[in-house]
Length: 164
Image (cartoon, rainbow, N blue to C red; front, side, top):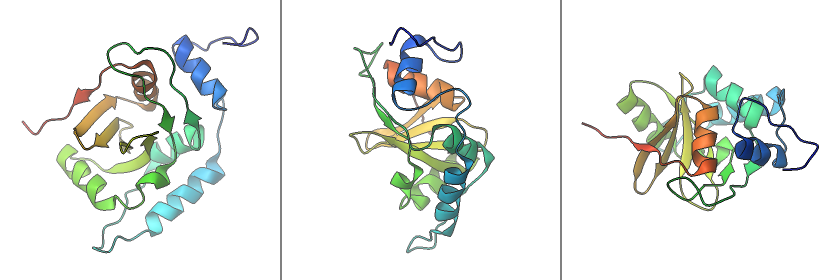
């Protein structure tokens, strides 16, 4: 961490440093880009007729964190830390998959971004809870984007979603 940087109390020091290195700062709010993503997702229709749900929790997350590519550092607490690419269009063609997850959760789910360097997709629900979907299953990353980013960037093992 640079000596001129002080951590916010919002994130642990290493997460705050990674966010700032990626271009985030408290008060960051790019609602114009968030609205562009919202329009693009709303207008996309899959070949089978599936559409993305778009709702305030997703738009707010995009406005604050959208477009950031956040590097993960260090060994990780329980698993390897995961770099994050917060571009919701990485999941543009997954409207059906995200719709299926939303139905299983009794909510709506919208793309948030991806785990950089992997096929894992990050998604957010109407309550702001964040999930990762990959070839091994569906994972709960936290009750909000702050917890999810901390989980991913510190290598905290997420909880697996089950159908039980």
